[in-house]
Image (cartoon, rainbow, N blue to C red; front, side, top):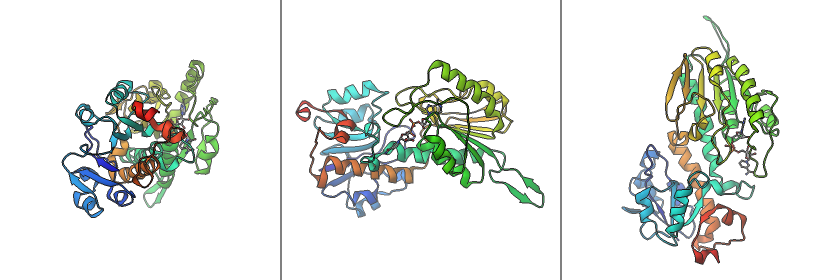
Length: 361
Ligand code: NAD
């Protein structure tokens, strides 16, 4: 199998789908990397050449499979052809038009978001690998913006109290944020609607913030969307508790739905000037009512960070982890470089979002 790795084209996207180390591990496949594809992530062309990749002007031409990070744009769509495999974050739940266009083009597309989150597919779980980066980076952004220390300090000039950090939504990103904030010495609390999370939060040395709302976990391990009554109760309770904190890192999400609103404007107004909110859910509208996706805004002295695509701001490790996820998926779809699509397999069938008639049978 020949795998093409184009340079990402989405504005601000610095990641690359395969890194040199993974190129050399892809057994039985040849890899064609577009010149400059890894430059923004710290992987120069020379490193790909050393790993055995061919450097090309057009990574789509002649490729049996195209490995991307973000969904293809118009011009990339036009370069994909019928029967070609595509892997990437294709946004199957939020971009039905994009998926329809891939289907029209006859592309056999696998969305990283649709890989079942089972133990067997763990190595391919790019949602988790990228959420790990986002959670960690969110805490660093908070620490950078907070006009205070995170750790407790005892100095000749006086004692500094530790920062109080609240993490809302304790999935993969949230748990990583809790761990990072703890490493920096903050006193950390976490909250999630899934009941199983309480123990995970506590095992990281954080306390669980009880707001009296307990949701349910769906079969896929995700949270069920709260009812309007539950949402209102949660908003009210969190609104009262949030002003106790210096930093709120918020990551709550429901797949395919707008981010639940957890931080009302009144809670922001109650926070001390200098406090910071990092809204990791900005991508899907944000958990805070005042978040402006893609912007950093100040509201009554509180900094609200709505930076998008946090994984791309740490492109080296984000790409390294993503590339291992892509490798695991490609090895699954084409063991030893020989394409063998088993539609009875839950990973292959689950991840595939478009396929041609021949592949269907
Ligand atoms: P996600 O990004 O969809 O959501 C982030 C968090 O927000 C979740 O923990 C969710 O419970 C929480 N949330 C949703 N609505 C909320 C609300 N109103 N208030 C507070 N919190 C709210 O989730 P994710 O991090 O991608 O994954 C969630 C879970 O999926 C994991 O923690 C795990 O249980 C499961 N998972 C399993 C595997 C596996 O078995 N291989 C891998 C990854 C994830």
